Length: 133
Ligand SMILES: [Zn+2]
Image (cartoon, rainbow, N blue to C red):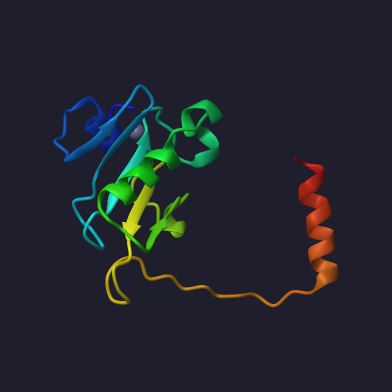
């Protein structure tokens, strides 16, 4: 996709601190890091959201994120996958950020607003989702 900043990085039209490249995957350091080693692993196949990417284009993403975590010495870290603006996706091209969490202050900060539910509601939801899989 011509206007996509990540596609431009893949093509080399925008410089990046490339960490890894294969036929299907590209990985580079985030230039607005939350912590040392914060990197992005992206499929070369352009798609805005995870469900836009064929399964075979996704298979290598997590192993590459894992290897970057190991290579930068991260002990605690988050692997993210955000879809949509309100879900904190900043570039409309699928990415898997690997964000080291060296201490309480640096790295990702997550809010986890638990909703009240009950087992009967979960049972209905479970049946609904399972029937579509
Ligand atoms: Zn793209």
